[in-house]
Image 1: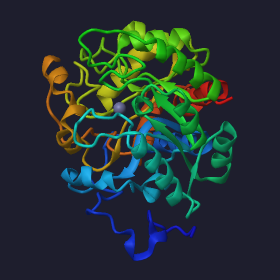
Image 2: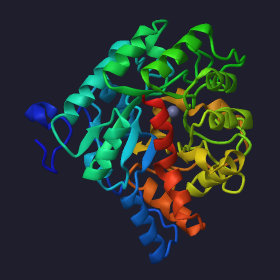
Image 3: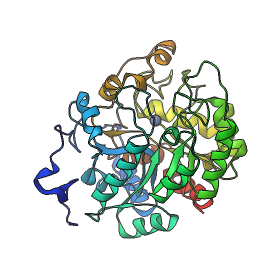
Image 4: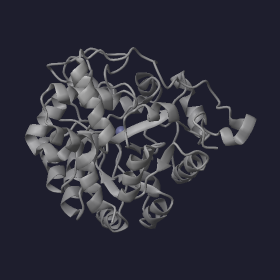
Length: 395
Ligand SMILES: [Zn+2]
């Protein structure tokens, strides 16, 4: 089935019903009113249509309308791809971090090896029954998706935790279609320290071997949830560009989830890219303490000044559903201690302007146009920088 009305797991027939009502793909929250004029929107939309645009980190799937149903939904392995939302996103490619691979961070749903393999296979079985969304494994796949007007998903994991001490499992994951992987999540694993650790042990010996194998495999490395030292040491030993797929600058908002100048600079020195995150209550700024696209852009401008236009992009870390509610359901993800220790800010129900994968890049492109960036600069940050790095990584 390839028609435009395919919904995830329709190939099952009547058995496709998910265990819970799912969030809508459109209009869950009011549209962002950025005050962009007609000419700004027209130029932004032309730039999106004509160029390869890449989100370095999102979860482009439908979550349950009531987020407390998420653990049961995830246990089915059948996350539902947002085909219609993606078709309207202006995106060529989304790095899709599936069920995360974070393993045990919450205690609610310990995603282990079998779960990750199940998710990788289940998602691809679904995608194989339609043609609007394709699985990306090479740079040539990205160019083909753009030429054909389809949307591509790059499968990734937020951390390598499910491989335990077995480097060979990286080969297996690559063979199953995975093309991006984090070193550690907020809790440490056998490869290195996560960002929550009171003592930063950096990259382990096993982690160094894993980085070498990731380089050889052509598996893109992410250090978004790794500790500063783990990230810096990963960059030092990797002979390919390294990504920080979804993060922000600690100099702008001082919480452990965001990154030191040294960690941000280390990414740029590899030829890699920092993707600005918009996960609720992370990339806030003193100028915009109510989290919105404007707060995120304060992090973008800081990183741009720090590392240059060739090493910045966007990894909004959004999804279809109530992300704040998800943080409440999976309390470990919110990192309440870190936020409580940070500067004063106002809690929001959602991040205005960067709430879901459908709206993100329309608003980002319009903001960049209005702020006076050139076409060349906008093309780089919407996806050109990531594409350049992938040409060196996926070999
Ligand atoms: Zn994350």
